[in-house]
Each structure stands twice: as structure tokens, then as C-alpha cells.
Image (cartoon, rainbow, N blue to C red; front, side, top):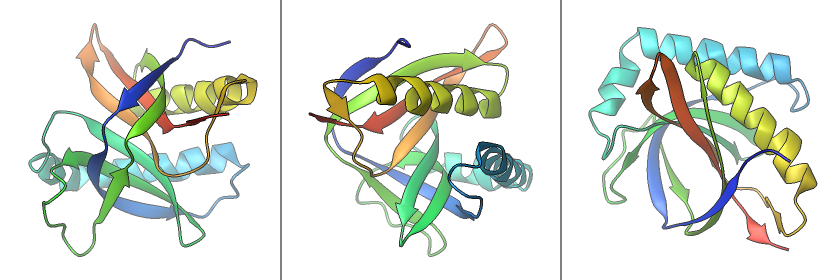
Length: 161
């Protein structure tokens, strides 16, 4: 089984700007292209840099969440829970509790997201015997760079079986 940890986290809040993913949930290539196109546009037009100015830390979150029966994907940063959000943004609450954490590094944020998503949902969760994911927001957290690679973690809220 892939290397992972279970970590107790306090609740936290992410301010995100998102897009609806239109691809079928089993169409990984389509979903990955939609996410990549979204991040490219969001980064190039300055919105990501503007969003980072509101952050309480240096982490950048790629959040996945089902909202009103739609698959949503957000670029986000951690904020104080009381901070007001712009109308076009979403305040995403992550619950206090246990999280599956998968760590990794890659040449790009896209590659890191795809790699950690594959490990978490393709290996760890299907093989897990004593915990399960029951929904709610999950996130790939880009934490920094070292030796020319981007490193980060995938955080998925889980419950014990």
C-alpha cells in the first residue's frame, strides 16, 4: 500500500474561486484537463497572486467539492474563518477530525495533484480497512518548492469504520 498517515486536524477555512467540472467523474483525463486549464487561466490573469495576499500561510489549495450535485474545483488559500468573502468566491469549511494525508513531490503543481490524487483515491482508500472517506471537501495542498520540485500533501477527511 502507498505511504500515508492519518492526522487529526482542527477545522480550517479555505477561500476559493472555482469552476464546475463537466467531465464524467470516471473520465480522469477530461477532469485533469479541465483542472489544468482552470489553473493556467487563474494563474496567468493575476487572480492567484491576488488571492495569496489574503492567506494566513503560504499554502495554495486545490479543493474538490460536490456542491448542489455539481463537481466543483477551486483554487484557494487558508483564511481566518471570520474573513468576509467576495461574492464570486466560496468559503469552504473543512471539519475538525481525522484526515488521510498523502505526501509527495513533482515537477509541477498539475503533476503533483494528479500523482497524489491517484495514490489517495486509487490505492490508499480502496485498500483501507479501518477508515473511509464519506464525502466533503478534499484538497491537494501545495506547500513549497525544494530542489526544483514542488512538494505538498493531499488531505482527505475520513472516519473510522
